[in-house]
Image (cartoon, rainbow, N blue to C red; front, side):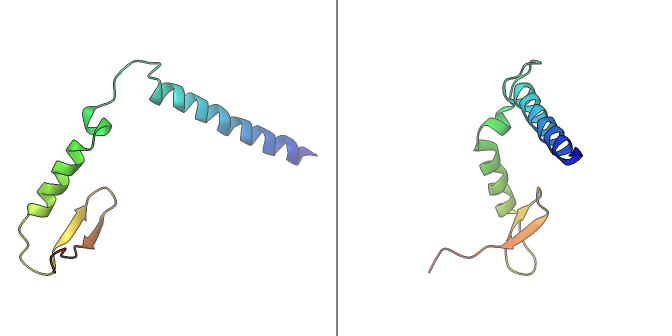
Length: 79
């Protein structure tokens, strides 16, 4: 019997947290604006271009991704 109250209260707390997150982050209830670097892809494209332009001294070229801390080998698109 207590299980239904626990599951219900956990679900309600997740719903309440989601609604609060939407109002604070997306609707800007507390004010503020979304930075241009987040709102457009221009910043990401320029950052990616600069990472690709770095000289490599050894090994195959890689696409650096500082967010995920992963490096991916870049395949040449030229035949």
